[in-house]
Image 1 (cartoon, rainbow, N blue to C red):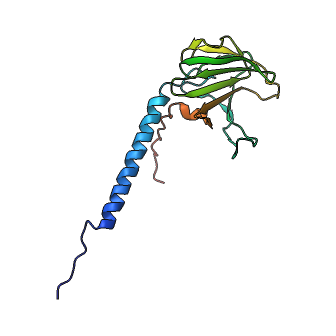
Image 2: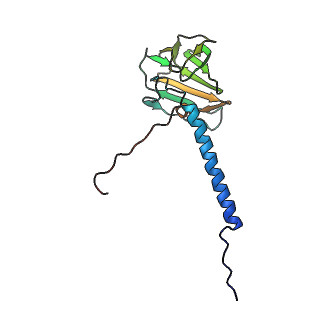
Image 3: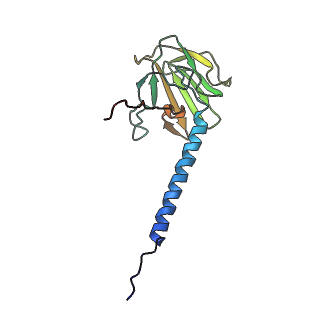
Length: 177
């Protein structure tokens, strides 16, 4: 009577290994794509990769017709310069429902919008990353700071996701925990 040893490379194990490898490659591809895109973006409040203080977070509605917050509000004092988040072409500069608005189309298909902004640019102008595109006006609804929105392929995205991810370093612990 012989004892049959399980084969190390069973079909189930091969399938699981293949699926795991595919998942890892997909994650690397997605991360690599976002890292390439993210290097070309800055915060409209700071003109740098760091966003500054976030006053109100991205909270998209479940459906387009429901209320929600389709961007982020960044701390910025009235009259301060507002910067283009990346290179692009000004799509709109004017007033929408009593609120100063500037919208910029970017090469990757993203459209960013800045409110309440008194634009110093006009539709059709080419802008560079970090260029001042206007000054922060007063929001008719009383919200503080600059509202920064981003639209890609018809969907609102979190504009903070356009910025490079911060490098986080943990301080070593001097004493054992």
